[in-house]
Length: 129
View: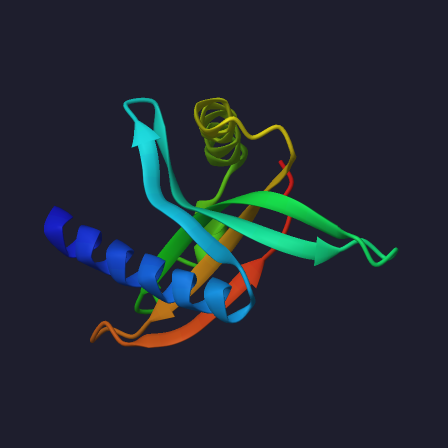
Protein backbone atom coordinates (compact mmCIF):
# COMPACT_ATOMS: atom_id res chain seq x y z
CA UNK A 1 0.00 0.00 0.00
CA UNK A 2 2.78 2.42 0.93
CA UNK A 3 4.52 1.76 -2.41
CA UNK A 4 1.28 2.56 -4.27
CA UNK A 5 0.97 5.84 -2.32
CA UNK A 6 4.59 6.70 -3.18
CA UNK A 7 3.99 5.98 -6.89
CA UNK A 8 0.80 8.04 -6.87
CA UNK A 9 2.61 10.90 -5.11
CA UNK A 10 5.52 10.80 -7.55
CA UNK A 11 3.19 10.86 -10.53
CA UNK A 12 1.29 13.79 -9.01
CA UNK A 13 4.52 15.70 -8.33
CA UNK A 14 5.64 15.13 -11.92
CA UNK A 15 2.30 16.48 -13.20
CA UNK A 16 2.67 19.47 -10.85
CA UNK A 17 6.19 20.18 -12.15
CA UNK A 18 4.96 20.03 -15.74
CA UNK A 19 2.16 22.52 -14.99
CA UNK A 20 4.51 24.89 -13.15
CA UNK A 21 7.05 24.76 -15.98
CA UNK A 22 4.32 25.55 -18.54
CA UNK A 23 3.48 28.58 -16.37
CA UNK A 24 7.11 29.75 -16.51
CA UNK A 25 8.43 28.47 -13.19
CA UNK A 26 11.92 27.00 -12.96
CA UNK A 27 12.07 23.82 -10.87
CA UNK A 28 15.05 24.00 -8.49
CA UNK A 29 14.55 20.79 -6.51
CA UNK A 30 12.07 18.09 -5.62
CA UNK A 31 11.59 16.42 -2.26
CA UNK A 32 13.79 18.73 -0.22
CA UNK A 33 13.71 17.59 3.37
CA UNK A 34 15.06 15.97 6.46
CA UNK A 35 13.66 14.11 9.45
CA UNK A 36 11.49 17.12 10.38
CA UNK A 37 9.66 17.50 7.10
CA UNK A 38 9.72 17.86 3.35
CA UNK A 39 8.91 20.34 0.61
CA UNK A 40 7.60 18.57 -2.48
CA UNK A 41 8.87 21.16 -4.99
CA UNK A 42 11.06 24.24 -4.68
CA UNK A 43 10.94 26.51 -7.70
CA UNK A 44 11.78 29.99 -8.90
CA UNK A 45 9.31 32.44 -10.36
CA UNK A 46 9.94 35.84 -11.92
CA UNK A 47 6.96 38.19 -11.78
CA UNK A 48 6.36 41.72 -13.00
CA UNK A 49 5.65 44.06 -10.11
CA UNK A 50 3.77 46.71 -12.09
CA UNK A 51 6.73 49.04 -12.63
CA UNK A 52 8.33 46.93 -15.37
CA UNK A 53 10.66 45.42 -12.81
CA UNK A 54 10.90 41.75 -12.15
CA UNK A 55 10.53 40.29 -8.68
CA UNK A 56 12.09 36.91 -8.07
CA UNK A 57 10.40 34.45 -5.72
CA UNK A 58 11.34 31.12 -4.25
CA UNK A 59 8.14 29.13 -4.18
CA UNK A 60 7.71 26.19 -1.84
CA UNK A 61 5.05 23.93 -3.32
CA UNK A 62 2.99 21.33 -1.48
CA UNK A 63 1.46 18.79 -3.86
CA UNK A 64 -1.63 16.80 -2.92
CA UNK A 65 -2.67 14.00 -5.24
CA UNK A 66 -6.06 12.29 -4.98
CA UNK A 67 -6.77 9.00 -6.70
CA UNK A 68 -10.43 8.30 -7.28
CA UNK A 69 -13.29 10.28 -5.78
CA UNK A 70 -13.01 9.14 -2.17
CA UNK A 71 -11.84 11.14 0.85
CA UNK A 72 -12.58 14.65 -0.39
CA UNK A 73 -10.60 17.17 -2.39
CA UNK A 74 -6.81 17.66 -2.41
CA UNK A 75 -6.94 21.01 -0.61
CA UNK A 76 -8.85 19.38 2.25
CA UNK A 77 -5.67 17.48 3.09
CA UNK A 78 -3.80 20.74 3.81
CA UNK A 79 -4.07 22.11 7.32
CA UNK A 80 -2.26 24.82 9.28
CA UNK A 81 0.16 22.24 10.73
CA UNK A 82 1.24 21.16 7.23
CA UNK A 83 1.62 24.75 6.03
CA UNK A 84 3.66 25.58 9.14
CA UNK A 85 5.90 22.58 8.42
CA UNK A 86 6.43 23.74 4.81
CA UNK A 87 7.18 27.24 6.09
CA UNK A 88 9.78 25.93 8.55
CA UNK A 89 11.39 23.76 5.89
CA UNK A 90 11.39 26.80 3.58
CA UNK A 91 13.39 28.73 6.16
CA UNK A 92 15.91 25.87 6.29
CA UNK A 93 16.12 25.80 2.49
CA UNK A 94 16.76 29.55 2.38
CA UNK A 95 19.53 29.22 4.97
CA UNK A 96 21.13 26.32 3.14
CA UNK A 97 21.04 28.02 -0.27
CA UNK A 98 21.70 31.59 0.93
CA UNK A 99 18.39 33.00 -0.33
CA UNK A 100 17.27 36.24 1.36
CA UNK A 101 14.62 37.29 -1.15
CA UNK A 102 10.88 36.87 -1.55
CA UNK A 103 9.23 33.54 -0.69
CA UNK A 104 5.76 32.06 -0.67
CA UNK A 105 3.90 28.78 -0.35
CA UNK A 106 1.79 27.43 -3.20
CA UNK A 107 -0.34 24.29 -3.38
CA UNK A 108 -0.95 22.09 -6.41
CA UNK A 109 -3.86 19.66 -6.40
CA UNK A 110 -3.76 16.66 -8.73
CA UNK A 111 -6.79 14.49 -9.46
CA UNK A 112 -6.26 11.00 -10.84
CA UNK A 113 -8.82 8.44 -11.94
CA UNK A 114 -8.81 4.99 -10.34
CA UNK A 115 -6.49 3.74 -13.10
CA UNK A 116 -3.89 6.37 -12.20
CA UNK A 117 -4.45 8.66 -15.18
CA UNK A 118 -4.22 12.40 -14.54
CA UNK A 119 -7.64 14.04 -14.85
CA UNK A 120 -6.97 17.55 -13.58
CA UNK A 121 -4.20 19.69 -12.08
CA UNK A 122 -4.84 22.99 -10.29
CA UNK A 123 -2.42 25.52 -8.83
CA UNK A 124 -3.18 27.88 -5.93
CA UNK A 125 -0.66 30.65 -5.32
CA UNK A 126 0.35 32.23 -2.02
CA UNK A 127 -1.60 29.97 0.31
CA UNK A 128 -1.93 31.48 3.77
CA UNK A 129 -2.13 29.77 7.14
